[in-house]
Length: 214
Length: 214
DNA sequence: TATCCAACCGAACGATCGTTAGAAAATTAA
DNA sequence: TTAATTTTCTAACGATCGTTCGGTTGGATA
Image 1: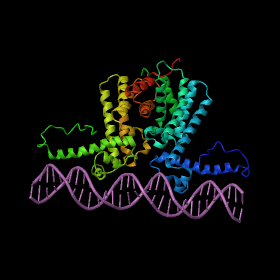
Image 2 (image 1 turned 180 degrees about the vertical axis):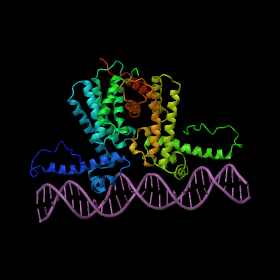
Image 3 (image 1 turned 60 degrees about the vertical axis):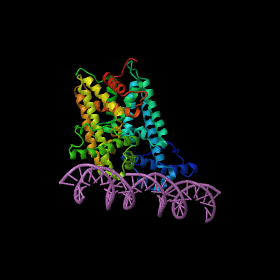
């Protein structure tokens, strides 16, 4: 599953007249992105500590030592995986809400994209979203926190646009919503749930409340 | 911090006439519970993989080899830590709701106890609540899942008693609520939030809804 | 007293880990 | 072609890990 990435590097020239530097970069990128791609899958399946560089190298069909030509350490590789996953998720959510106009519609679309991104599309950044911040490796902690913070700004803005009851704390709302949505990672069963249905039901309960007369 | 444990084993006899077998068991228990106690703290701070048996042994003031007299493996020690934390949390929540009568009041009390238990009282079972189930060590996975399942039954029952709008899926509600509450582990700042306020606000938003006229 | 057994210890084994050194191969440049 | 550079390789180092082995200790039992 090489995961056709690269929105860039696709100016259709003939392979001969391509700039040699771009060519080199592309070649390097191919190996680098192959490593990220397999690392993504294995980290997610086995956890960071449960995955050895040898595991990843084997899956990427290289020798373990060769990985250090592309990444200076295991933690830097983890960062590359998280960064890619975080950026892709952010782009996904942003692209999804662009087409919508009403504030509630935009919010619902974002929620669906968030859950879908976590559950369906790429299982990778699951670990990023599920690991307690205080366990982030020290060498990349600040970057990871900034990445997550940037992502959450999408929801800050979406919530700003919502007409809410007076007295609703928008920070608590954001954390509650993201928490409830992301928690689905723990219980999602693909035979039983769909990401879109999960997102819509959670938002609906929060929007309209759950209390009734029985 | 030996954490004054042992509600039991305290029949006040003179030390001379104490039953020898109880004496021995007590002695063993003291070491065992000391290990669990320090392991609890270190696992939570450094994670399971980030903690070595040597770390725990040092904190418990023993030699690493001695730990294997009390626990047959590191994973069994982890289980002991999780089991203790899970049971204590369950007892806490159960004790809290016993005093309440109205279904909403009981639910609110449970939510407060849940968040308080996770954030304040004992930082231990945080990892249990925050680790993705698919990363549980294989040898204790079934036990951990059963432990969590048992805990969630409290909320199944509490939600059964709530008068809800028609169309509310009680399973989704439970998972949403527990997710939103537990997620506070990620963002709780003790200078800014209190566990009780977090729990009450989350439940209130879900109960009454957030939508307003602006 | 001699015996026993729970509890602990010192030392080490074997495995695995992240990582590095240095050379070979592959690719590009001249 | 040759030279230069990028990429990958083989081999291993040093550290740490969970765990085990064979003892020692010290208090309770008889």
